[in-house]
Length: 83
Ligand code: SF4
Image 1 (cartoon, rainbow, N blue to C red):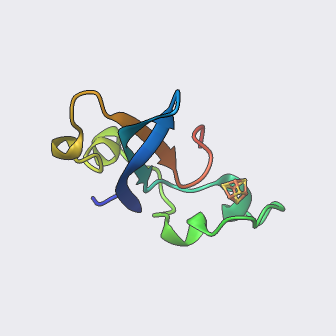
Image 2: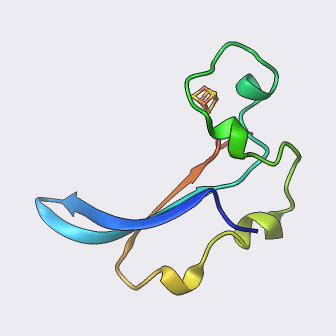
């Protein structure tokens, strides 16, 4: 399964640029958006699968070949991490 997004960028730590990779995982999505409970600030719910994912479906979204030693890795979910 592919993530919603994966991209490389520079991140400045202590004023020095470091290689970083950001991964936005496809998930069940935020319950607030799923159930219409108030928050519609982001549009990630449109990219979600709207079902619980198996752990290996989550891990399969991470392209470990793109992660190099010393790289900053930022992982986001398409909603609440706890969902
Ligand atoms: S992920 Fe956050 S911003 Fe997006 S709908 Fe849910 S609570 Fe709102």
